[in-house]
Amino acid sequence: MTATIGADLPALAAAASTRAALVCDEEVVSRAALAARVSAVAAHLAENTAPGQGVALAMGNGPELVEAFLACAISGRQALVYDPGWPAPYRAAIDAALAPAITLETLPEPALSTPASAPFPPPPAPDAPFYVGFTSGSTGLPKGYRRSHRSWIDSFAASEVEFGLGEQDVVLAPGGLAASLHLYGVVHALHIGARAVMMRQFHPRRALRLIARHGVTALYATPTQLQMLIEAGAGESFPTLRLLMISGAKWRAETRAATQALFPNAGIAEFYGASETSFITIARPGEDVPPGSVGRPAYGVTLRIRDGAGRDLPAGEAGAIWVASTMLFDAYACGDAPETRRVGGFLTIGDHGRLDEAGFLYLHGREKRMLVTSGLNVYPEEVETVLASLPGIAEAAVFGLPDFLRGVELVAVLRGAVDEPALRAACRGLLPAAKIPRRFLSLEDWPRTSGGKADLRALEAIARDRFAR
Image (cartoon, rainbow, N blue to C red; front, side, top):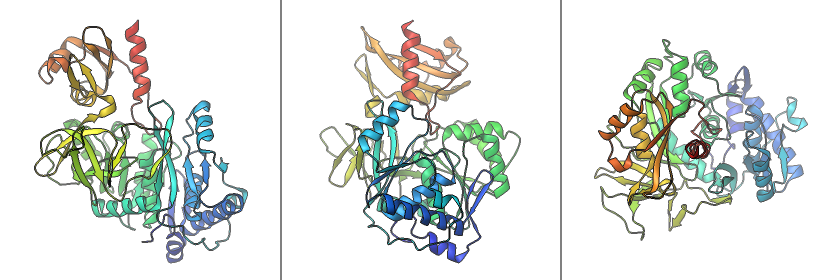
């Protein structure tokens, strides 16, 4: 495997030129066509930009976005992957902050036809930045994180050790590529010669048809996408899937049973990480992971738990999670995150947790979400996990609203039917009194980010508005 993203595409095309490399809904792109289109776009970038400059990819989800992304990588440019769902002020703020050399909203004309394959340019340096992705920022505007070729190449190595993916696999990443999870899944599959399957827009029934039609063997999914697939595929099974890779799942017994019914031959691999870190911990299929843990350190990762003074804490004590690996991001390209800090080779993004004696990690929550109510530190994630485990509650989000007596009053927004007396009774058996929300709001229209996660900022605004009334 080469040391830069995309550099292996010509060799893969030479080995099997007509083999399908990328599938998007009904469209199939062969290895040879993919390499030729990437080369044509790279030539366009070489004529219109300087090495190292940013290229804004303001494109819809599709093969064109993948091809433009890979063209940036092989030509030594930085792909700025914009979210097509951003409102105009977001887009304008990012443009102003990053000043991309050019913006591509479609592929340039030479790549829209079927170009003749041309030699790839010499590869950039492994430590050169090639990608700027975006995640929610503290100001409300997205913050851009910059990644080097090496950080993703080393992440690919971790994927191969932990998940055992290879050229024979068919990998589905059904979500928008503005979310790094799905972009990573597609690019990694292409890098190792596996077939990558994607969708212009996620729809659970269409995703299941793609799994059946192409014999998908590995699936990246968010917990929300998985739940939608379960609901859409009730009573069916898809036996080709051997591996389900899911980030940050909060499992109920019935969800796990339904997943195994839908994908009877699939092992479930869970991982915890972040856009700034890649993988942090892994729970592989069949691994004996203690209840409540998010797994042990991923391949190539060293973990420390530290207190506010930066001192390492012993097993069992909670503090900030610090991560060391060669998969860490370079820096923020725009925006900031005060909770993200580096000391030596270690990085923290503000998550808190603890390690047990065997090295398994347990998450407590994010530093920036921690609330203090009646003098007690409360991580909303802990309360959300309890609420979402209760019958009839599909999702939960917990926030703190100003309260004269307690400093902060806990409130919960729930997706599902709310029987408040029964809910309070159940909470009393699972949470200390100070951690039980004082007010509940049932909401069926659940706002989501483009990556399919709960939009906490929007949910908090709804809670403040409704409870203020």
